[in-house]
Every structure is written in structure tokens, then in C-alpha cells.
Image (cartoon, rainbow, N blue to C red):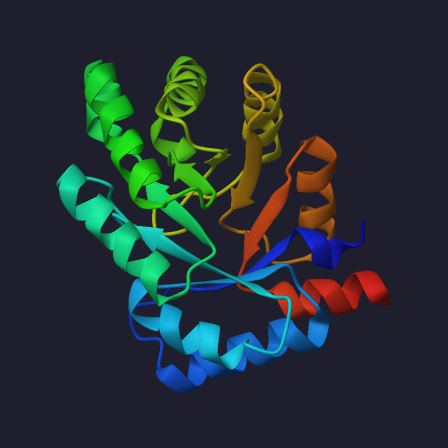
Length: 217
């Protein structure tokens, strides 16, 4: 596959305008990227803008902290799917994970997976806040919750994806048949190449168009 098949062209900034989302979608369409990733309020706009393309629409749930009520996360997912979202990226309840409240983490994921109605769900674990042991535990809980991917980061915390984390998550994800999405800080071709070599199945990046062009060149 080409680099375009891995890229989710992302714009999640709180100040993002409708025109910026339209531009994002047009860039993704022109570069033939896999998907765009936008905030829930822009799912319908993105879907409409991309109606004549194969570019998918991904949105976020419980973003960026993951610490809201499970039923709110589920409702966000349900509404996003109704608006046309193809995939859901939810933030894990990281405090619950670190507290050892594993059942609560699993149930939180299950509710979103159910609300997503068979659409793929990725679970963001914010790797920069976790020990390696917690990352390993997180992957197990994601599998038990029925989601399809583990995702490294929101991009809103102190660090994003690292090659070491992607390698670790790849090793654990393979035990359960999960995918791995690397996100946060992937802004140049060298970094993207390193993440793919480490085992990433998807790349979440605001530099999707530039990366595609760099690989093409």
C-alpha cells in the first residue's frame, strides 16, 4: 500500500472553522488519503464535502480527556454515526485504568462499541501518561471491550506517538487481532516511515497532504 492508505488527515483544534474543515476534506480527497478525522460537530459537514469520494470520516468521542460519563461517550458515538461517521476514536478513562478499575474501563469501551453499531472503534490510551505495564494492560482491556484499534495519543497532552510505544503496542495488539494507530507529532516523512516500520496500521496527522506529497516525491 502507498502512504495515502494509512493517513487520517486530522483537524481537531477547538478553533477550527467550517471552512478549515472543508479545506481539510478537499486536501484529503485530492491526495487520496484514507480518512479525515474531525470533531463531532463537523461530521455532517465532512461527510457532505466528501460525498463523491472514497475518503472516510473519523470522529472523536470523550475527547480529549476521556473522563466523562460512559453514557455521554455512547451518545456522542451514536449521534456521530447518524451524522455519517465511518469510524470512532474514543478516549479511554485513563484515571480508571491507572486506578485498577478494569471492569469500568471495559464497560466504558463496550458502551461506545455498541453505540457505534459495528463501525470500527479505536481507543486512545494517551501513552505519555502510562507505564509500559499500563500500556500492556490497556491493550488487553480494549480487546475485552470489543474495540478494533489501540491509538497512542490525542495530540493534546505532553507527548504524542513514539516508535518505542508503537512497537510495544504492535506486539500486544497482535495477541488480540487489533490494529494500531499512531497519532501525535507525526509531521514529516521520516517520522511517518518510522511509525509504519514499527507496526502502525494508521497514522493520525495534521500534515497528511504534505506527507503524501513527500512520499510521492
